[in-house]
Image (cartoon, rainbow, N blue to C red; front, side):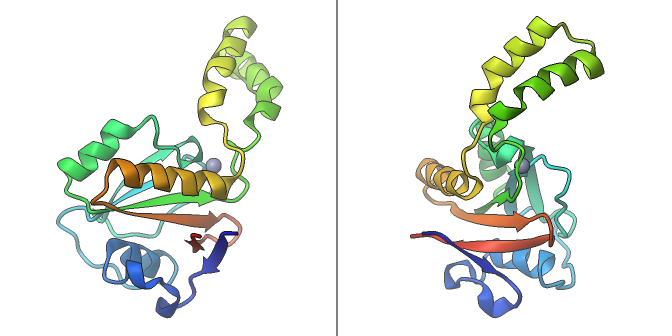
Length: 180
Ligand SMILES: [Zn+2]
């Protein structure tokens, strides 16, 4: 079983993240550390597009890729760019509770109706759109998805530190995840 660790002091941060941009991210966002100045990015954050999340981090500190569920499978060129050209050595993959990408299939009717009413689409077109893209973004469980995505990215970029983190949207706080 994975365990969520609420980071409320610097001592809560795992040893493997000490001295890395992951520690800095947690210090800034959770612990209110004063912002340092950055000339270049040290971190890449992959997080959900969800409107309830906003990271408290200094300008220039991090690249951020936002997508449904924090899924980076369709953003790989951007990940490679941040590593190769941006020079980042660490990736924070941030999932969150109550993610809209969980059980996406249950939102099919609403999705189609919304595109027809709000965007002026034809119903058939909206349905096809949903059917072809929903399976790419649907996730079953936020934390399990996050851990499998972390594993996938570690395999792809073996020299990069990849940290799965969990954002609680009710508290605006990041949790660490103890991986088995
Ligand atoms: Zn989400």
